[in-house]
Length: 108
Image (cartoon, rainbow, N blue to C red; front, top):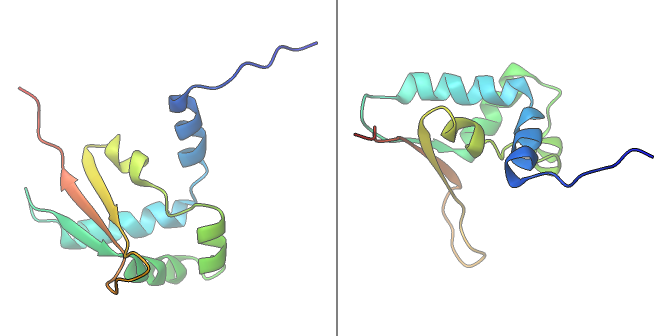
C-alpha cells in the first residue's frame, strides 16, 4: 500500500495557485502594466478584471471563475514582490470589490 502523507500549507497553496487559468494572470498583468507607476499602489476593480478576463477568453464565465477560485491569485503575486490586499464590501456596505497591489519594500 502506498503511504499518503498530509501536505503542508505551502504545498496546498502552491497546488491551488498552479491551477489558476493563464487568462486570469494575463489580465492582471495587463492591468498592472497599464496602471503601475513606480512606488505607487495599483487598485484593480474586480468587475474591470472580470471584463478583461472575458475579453481574453470568452469561455471563462464569472460563475466558473468564482466557483473554481480563479480570482484567488494573491499568493502568486506576493511571491513575485507584491503585497496584495483583497477588499470586498460587507453585506451592509456598497462599494466595489478591489485588489490593491503594493510593491513590497526591499529588506536592508
